[in-house]
Image (tube, rainbow, N blue to C red):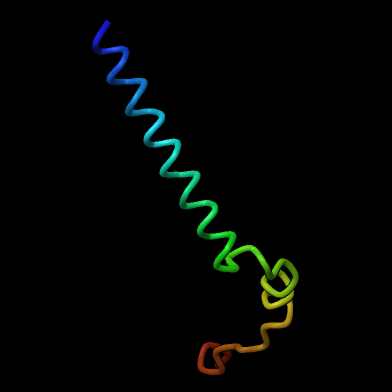
Length: 53
């Protein structure tokens, strides 16, 4: 029975840690920009000129 309690406390602690990390990343602006990352891939014009010989 004590093993179940230890596993329960451990799993709740890990879940709380992930929740805190998610809330911190949302508050720090990690998910604010949803448009430019896909557009950056489409608008990238840098090509390696030496490979076209």
